Length: 413
Image (tube, rainbow, N blue to C red):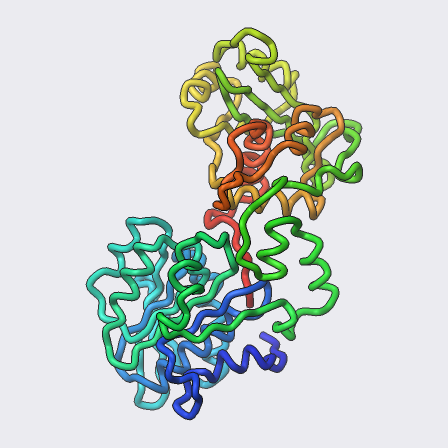
């Protein structure tokens, strides 16, 4: 691993807990801000350094959204750095922990995933001297508060990092807005605080996001979702002619409805880029008559038109339609992954990067791009209208284009 000198803000994270520093009086630290701003690595190295300086023979926790994500985003780069700094590290993968030793001192660091409300039981009953939460806003409050309750030892400290979400998120309300009450030290990061990023890479990241996600991931603001979800799709340059010839692979994504519209997208892979080459969109309100599952299946077959489709991903709640496809035995059908907010992020990024392209003949999909909006309540939720093609596009992205089980969140090393 190659290194560059830490930025002043990263050095502040590394040193804030030292006894001679005024900031040592705080019970914890919160680092939030932009993606790729250098929070995670400096915070995790500082966390272990503080633990080894302050304690011997004690237990600590490092928490992420899942065990897989905490291993990838925190543990893997951290352990490499610790070894180069001269620490002895013994990793026990089956037990989800590693032991760090320096001279006669040794401490144990447990890894936890806080995916859902049930995760709180995993950490219950432990006694900890400190806990580090990587991307704390992705974890349920019950898990975080259970972990905090485990830090009952004198001189224990709490460590949080995250990219901002909406202002009514529980972590913003209970921690960001109550810094004095919680007695925590707060540092806000931008991409300029990461000296390992070139200006070229900074420019690239600035072009990947727009609207709310730009404000959060690039400017690092806690801001409410508002307006169009994909505002950049109004540009003519974001629509493409249908490629000529046969694709290397075909996939269909389906958002199924009876009263609500059904939207099926046919995707073709050309030179590493997925194009939405055609679609089936049926609205009973628009047409004046409903269709049965079998009639929708016939529409699906007409859309495919004899092409060799590798899989069909379907709205996981459409059990009856999934059974119809299975019963005919002609196509492989998969229930789609249905992470709404992660899927919207992934879709926006794929469209901006050009890995996903919408063809000009897909008129209903294009129409919905111009209407698909956030709720006006301030929480992160799209309006449940004009969202049927948007859902089938999202199913394609989460289930075919983006197959990471942990969902998207920016890695800030």
